[in-house]
Amino acid sequence: MASVFSARSSPRISPIFLGLVLVTAAGGALTLIGTRIPVTAGVVILVLAGWAVSLCLHEFSHALVADRCGDHSVRGLGYLSLDIRRYANVGLTFVLPLLFLLIGGIPLPGGAVWIQRSALRSRAAASAVSIAGPLMNLLLAFVLAVVVPFVPPLLGAGMSFLALIQVLAFILNILPIPGLDGWGVIDPYLSYSTRASVSRFAPYAPLVLFALLVFVRPVASALFAFASFIYGAVGGDSTLASLGQELFFFWQR
Image 1 (cartoon, rainbow, N blue to C red):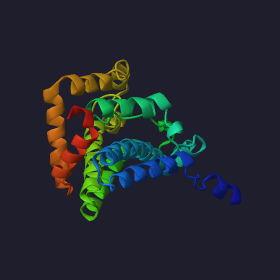
Image 2 (cartoon, rainbow, N blue to C red):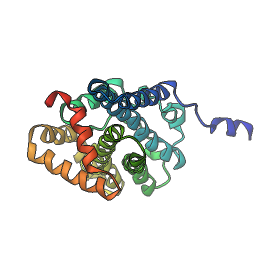
Image 3 (tube, rainbow, N blue to C red):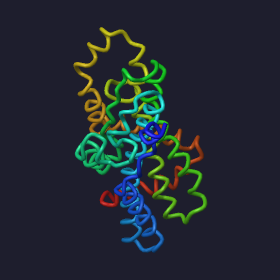
Image 4 (cartoon, rainbow, N blue to C red):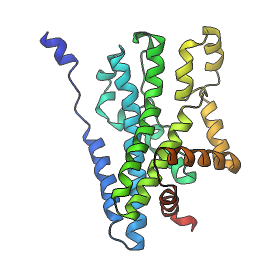
């Protein structure tokens, strides 16, 4: 009994994750100074570090549901520690998503947790594992939207833009495109031949999507308009989000 309890005990939260949370808070604190340079720097730090925090929480959600649904290997792999280094690799998980965010405000999904799907109890469990990450992004957007009315406007602007990014991440991730979480939701119900055929181009499908978003303006505009609609539906302030976006992309002014 004791050994079973020890094996299933909760992993410690990574100090790196806690550091990212502190950097996010520091960015928020800078916005309270009130002058242009600290406010701009604060919004940039808040959004970038906050996005890194959300990447960790997104992947953690996948792993947590997988653990509850039968794949306990995620514990030994460190996926439940919220350590950003555990999710694929630093380049794919951290650098590349932040680069896409800086270029066009597109929240490129980061790395991935490797799930032993054969260990999951059912096809429904496999679908739940896939949808857990996007739902975490939507939850974060809702929490931020709830908090914004109670903070100073400039801090609220940064938080609102970060929340809008969470909505964008939710929308992008639930698209039924191979390589994204939306495809993972329906994949367990597809035939083996269909999955085998799709697997050949699955690594490239998300890149094609993000190329369209970055280089074809109408596609990105439609995505942002839809995200703004959903953000408003969960109680977000689109005006503050626009201000936060303007501050974040300060070099475009």
